[in-house]
Length: 137
Image 1 (cartoon, rainbow, N blue to C red):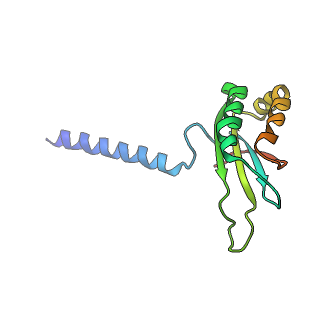
Image 2 (image 1 turned 45 degrees about the horizontal axis):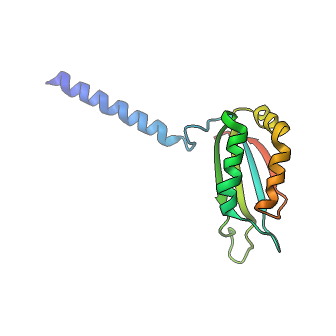
Image 3 (image 1 turned 45 degrees about the vertical axis):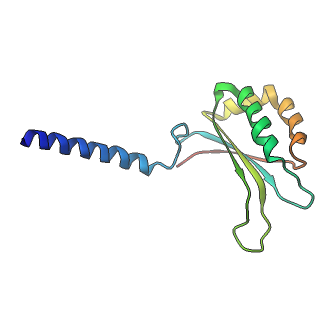
């Protein structure tokens, strides 16, 4: 009886340790520390337009197809409001592309930049701001 209780207790402690370790990580499983994150910002402004449906249904699927397995994950944010009341929304949309290395992104852009840029007018009149960063947490 004691042996069964100890085995059960050990199993419960193991499960709690696994759950606790996973809860401490705020990153999705496909995104780990050191992953390269390409952030594409679309600033708000007078006369600026952004077609979120096209962006999510056409542009991002095209990016996934072009970059293939080099593209590890994607995400899209739709701007809703600024942080302070009465402050204009800073960005209409933000796109995220995740790669194992900066070279993986740059190699894809060398090949597909013309095609990607040619699609931008189909969903926006905004010149995007691009930032490349490394995920640290």
